[in-house]
Amino acid sequence: MGICDYLGIDLEYIVLGLAGVAALLFLLLIINMCMIGKLKKKYRLFMGDTDAKSLEEKIEQRLEQLNDLVESHYTNKEKIEKLEGQMNVTFQKIGLVKYDAFNEMGGKLSFSLALLNEKDDGFVINAMHSREGCYTYIKEIIAGKSIIVLASEEKEALDMALNYK
View 1 (cartoon, one colour):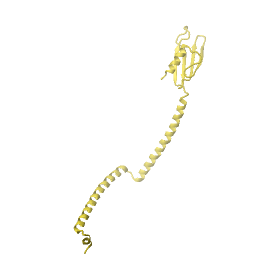
View 2 (cartoon, rainbow, N blue to C red; view 1 turned 180 degrees about the horizontal axis):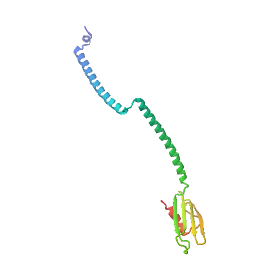
View 3 (cartoon, helix red, strand yellow; view 1 turned 30 degrees about the vertical axis):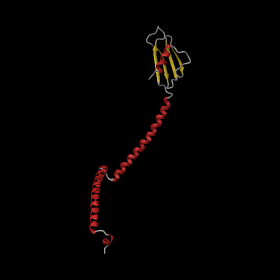
View 4 (tube, rainbow, N blue to C red; view 1 turned 90 degrees about the horizontal axis):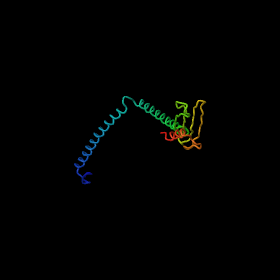
């Protein structure tokens, strides 16, 4: 009495079961071979005409370039922050009015010039030209206003600077 008889299993069923498992394994083998072929094509495309050594060198070069870019990014960021800090105190708004201070003179040689920063602080320069000479006056501007009364030309120059785009 054999083991198959003892368990009550026909030998034919075991052979058929093993044949089915072999067919399934053969199918999996074919699928794996196809997948490996596709992977080899991708590998060849990735590597191109280079070997692993030159690919490693290329990757190292790219990493060095990336490090340089990061370093220059931080340098540029610091420079931009410095410039932004300086922008608060630089004159950004301008107003200029040319006029004849005295009717006997021609050519509009007199002028009022307003220069303001971002906070509307600055000054107005008024230069009046006459036959006897040129007289220059400066008036301080704080938050867009002057504590000294402005002449009409000075006021016009200040308004131009305040509305400067």
